[in-house]
Length: 169
Image (tube, rainbow, N blue to C red; front, side, top):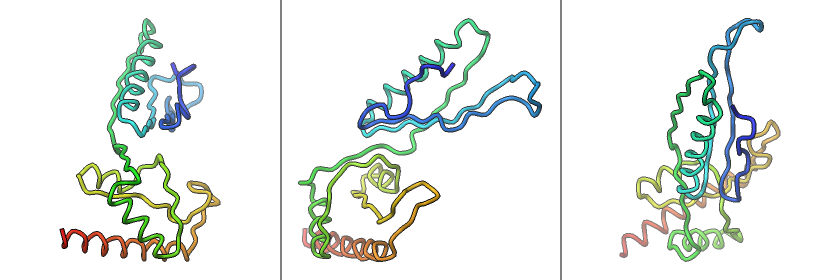
């Protein structure tokens, strides 16, 4: 069923990962009577995500047609994408505070799920920052203690600057 399906890096804003495929009974000589898969798709554009989910479901249904197999596909959207421009006030505040700490910010897009997705989904403005780690999601991942401490200072500075701005509004 999965042979030929589009997955991996779909475009610069979208990915798909067939992360877990599990099936069969306990003995290798047994005929597999079911398969469970857990997949992930994400995109910075909700329309692209929904288009991919439609493609995925249609592709799977087409591949099992006339085989006698049944298909039960369920999905949940865990993280909605979001973006800000460099002219959004929250981004301007972040740049200002980073520069005040002697750090030259690099504004970029990332494709990760984080608390920021949940906050923005609840209409609470939030920008995401790198945390000074290397080799993320690997056995070699490390984090710089100095940069972790700086991230705490940045969080404090941003909350103070944002609160002061809201009080004066």
